[in-house]
Length: 169
Image 1 (cartoon, rainbow, N blue to C red):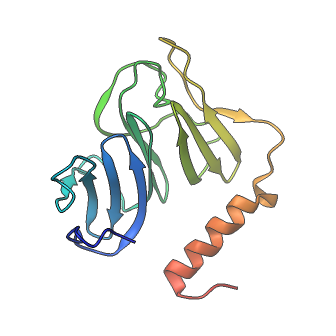
Image 2: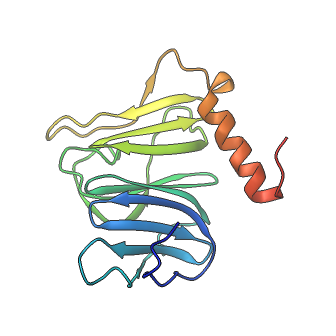
């Protein structure tokens, strides 16, 4: 739950992720940052989503980069000196951009960030983007992972059903 001192951003909360700059809240009315600096606990700031083509479903924030999942795409922004955005280059992004060239063009179900490594659970398996200093990185398939048997995917599907339908089977 949100700290009592904080004013609630508009809309219902869809997803949240704690990052370097504070708490990122994805709501039905947009993406908001609640700074982690003393004296700003009761403020929130809208983050532009003008480069995102459809309603975001979840957000994941790392130390200096962010990933956002929509129904049909993955978007990224932030620091990219080590290629951690998965764009195939080392150019930082101030605004969210669609991540290209994920093998087989799978639908992303979940995304998480561990340090500079981004991990995707997709309809076609598990993908990771392991940054190597100064080397452009792209998402690579991780072998031995069957999304049809994935506990993580089952949980995500159940959460989605519950959120959309109000029930779970």
